[in-house]
Amino acid sequence: MNIEYENVFCYLGFGGIKPNPDTIKLVDECTHEIQDISNPKYTYEIFDIKRQNKVLFLRGSNIIFSEDDILHYLKDSSKVALIAATLGIEIDRRILLYMKTQPIKGLILDACASAAIESLFSKADSEVKSIALAQDLYATFRYGPGYGKFPLHFQFEILQALDAYRKIGLSVTESFLLSPRKSLTAIMGLRQTMPLKGENRTKCMSCSAVNCQYRKDESLLE
Image (cartoon, rainbow, N blue to C red; front, side, top):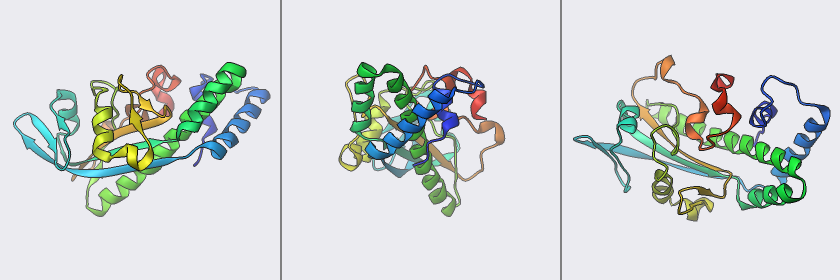
């Protein structure tokens, strides 16, 4: 699992500022710690789309999309991939411990974990794209619950459709937040036509971290 330091520094809010040596040393320590204690897992499944009036069904699941934003996102798609990934519960426990005992290290470990789950999720969506290409289909940008007008309650429905608790130990709270916290879910439309350049979006579209540095400056992801 690759953890890109540039992403870590961005999550920490450095922008174009070069971190000092002490910060870089802590990032080194935290990235190695994540490699040691994380339990990275992901799962995905591809579903055929059935359209009826202004409602979209995913065959073989209980998921129904009727929101205009999602219908527009999937307007050219014939299939939908559901993806979920997690780093495991020990990461959450270690971040909480450091937040109480070494707050600065806790913040840095949190940022490293955010970069790590993004890397893991990218590996999963790359596999989906390869499967899609083998079927002469192209993947859209990924789109996660909680972003834009994609209701957060779809976290539960995605995990249920993927049987994610049994497969990777990922569940959702009553407020539709993922547990373990360092986890992600998203959907990807699969279509016969290649997305135009202007249709590609940033990876923020799959993330529920609404206050992170990436959302403040999405140009950093271009």
